[in-house]
Amino acid sequence: MDNSFKFSAVVAGAGISGATVAARLAAAGLRVLVLEAKAHAGGNCYDCRDAGTGILVHKYGTHIFHTDDKRAWDFLSRFTAWHPYFHKVLAQIDGALVPVPFNLNSVRRVFPPVLAARIEGKLLERFGFGARATILELRGSADADLRLLGDYVYEKVFLHYTLKQWGKTPEEIDPAVTARVPIFASRDDGYFRDRYQAIPREGYTALIGNMLAHPNIELRLNTPWEAARACVPAGTPIFFTGAIDEFFGFKFGELPYRSVSFEFVEYAREYFQPVACVNYPCHFDFTRIGEYKHFLGEKSPKTVVSFEYPAAFERGKNERCYPIANAETAALYARYADEARRAFPQTRFLGRLGDYKYYDMDKAVLRALDAAEEFLRAF
Ligand code: UDP
Image 1 (cartoon, rainbow, N blue to C red):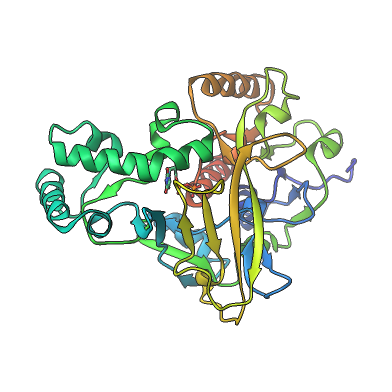
Image 2 (spheres, rainbow, N blue to C red):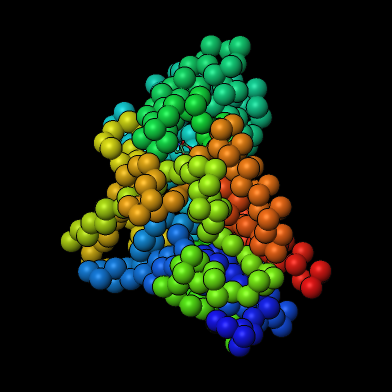
């Protein structure tokens, strides 16, 4: 990369955020260089065929695309056909497999019929059919039965899972995190309520590959930003989707993350479990087991699952998966964001690691589309 540098913008990171920016800029006629540290594109959405079974597995854990936003859906639909898939999660609780988020079916499954009917009546009366309630609302309720439900779900679904997942109690983490999984006064066993829910028919790696397969895009794999940055001419607009603290050499300190290690296990039987995800809130050291053949309805006499073991993120040892939202990390992130605005006005930070935000895939796409479009308006 010298004076023959012919790119209008550089994107660091070929995950879903970077690929979205690159695809949008390329479609507008700009030449884009995409730098990716890993040997593959796809970021944490990366999937590939399991060697033993041929089943498509998500190497960094189960990813289910879901959105209420037509713009995100339409944008990605240019690059993939979809397999409609409605995610259901069961949790192993008191010897039963119970739908999560907790709903009226879950109530019937775990409580004796008389109590279940009473709780159901009160949920419907207090919140209305189809409404959602957070665990905090139920535990703070004036009604003893609703409090009982709240305390039960807190103990059996949230407390131990959250201790494993975050190393902290639900009270010690940002309430928005557990509010992702509310309680529903309905019989819908679906994990999400979004209008669009699907898996890319050829997988996420193929989707992101298609996004990057534009003649205006050059993708360089095995190219960490640190190794390439000196060769990018000053003033080149940069979209940086890596970790913002790393970009600045951790000068204000390190932003913490939770990581997850995945143990993939093959079984010589058709199915391991009835749905793609079974959570183990109260048992074992793993949080959940994902069984991949459910996603695309793949047929095989064998199956492959992953056990998820959460852990602290350690640089060089594992991957950054979840930003940890609290007042301290918000203040640290703000110092980096201020420094970015001050010293690197040509560099836009985005994605889970650039914004230090627990984005779902659709939110990452929307954030990246906004960043690309804002840039194009000023270009
Ligand atoms: N959670 C829980 N028990 C469950 C499912 C979720 O305690 O059975 C909590 C946990 O703190 C988790 C958060 O809710 O980190 C969000 O769950 P979600 O399934 O959205 O997490 P993700 O799929 O993004 O890992």
